[in-house]
Image 1 (cartoon, rainbow, N blue to C red):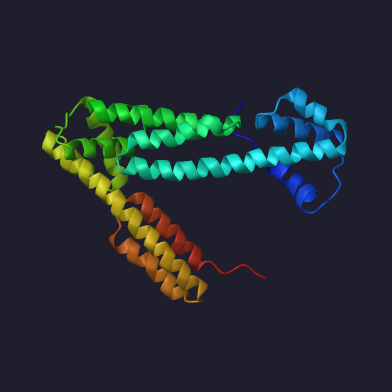
Image 2 (image 1 turned 180 degrees about the horizontal axis):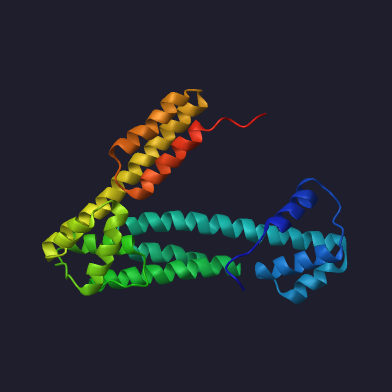
Length: 262
């Protein structure tokens, strides 16, 4: 089964039948939708087809399907929030446990695959933490954060070719020039300083844009468009991380667009 699913049709059907009280008409298209979606949430095809004997049982199938979609989504979202928080604090085992807890109860294949993927990634980061060796199969910045904590714990940074490559491709995303990067990669001490600069720029930039977006929204909703624009201008006056600059620029363009006609 693909990682991509389209649950909009089943949500629309559930809204009409379960929320608005419309009759569930078992047309061929509706039967196909119910059987397909039931399988996507871990219900056997045979059981789904059995449920289509009449509208009452089919409505129960629809209700169970939506329950699995919504409960699984809430469960995974909450676990991911806890996982990221624990990961960012350096508790990789605790982060892994969040995904194990999901897998212990989750029946929806899509959510299971997502949890398994995150668990695999966290297991890889744990290996980086233990060895100091980076991997091309893992995301860059989380690996740098793991290496930063290793240094804080007293481990020396080993400037391998893989780490040079990782720092070389990550530095531009933090607004660091090629000349600065090449100079820093001449020594483990320079590489360590470069890594700390990359991570601190992203931490500071994320905090800056998050706070500015909150202030911008508050001013915009109060009718102070110029004050809202100024929040983004203030970000652009100091921000060097391209990702956060693009976010601020896009918000500024949005504030400059005329409001939609009523």
